[in-house]
Image (tube, rainbow, N blue to C red):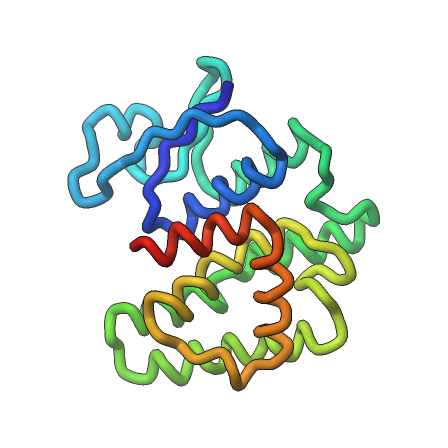
Length: 192
């Protein structure tokens, strides 16, 4: 059994939720109030952040990117990484560069000057990437899609960012929302 220390509003925790759902894993979820973090959370993750997972009482594992990779290696089916090493590296690079999207998202959320334009530029870049491919990593759904979709959903549904100007990105999001794991995350976002 896997325990997920979670916060519904956290897009990093969303990554873990989506991968766990895609893998069809049984999960016990412990919801954390991020505005009043319990002291024991710092024993699980010294940074006091979610997500954190524990598997059958093993050592806690934190950081969403590490958790995604761990779950992919530990539970390889269904595969969420391409088989080709070069394609795998490309997916990892997209995840590594997530700040190209997340930084403008958070700047807009904080109401910083110029943030809307920065987020528009980040979304336009994703739109161009998706012009001739179904998914961020290429022809197949992967951890790259899972890594970025939480912010796209939150930009659209919580910040009111209009995606109609990004047709390839909109088509990608529609493909993703047809997947039960992403549809469930869209439901989480809608309830926030």
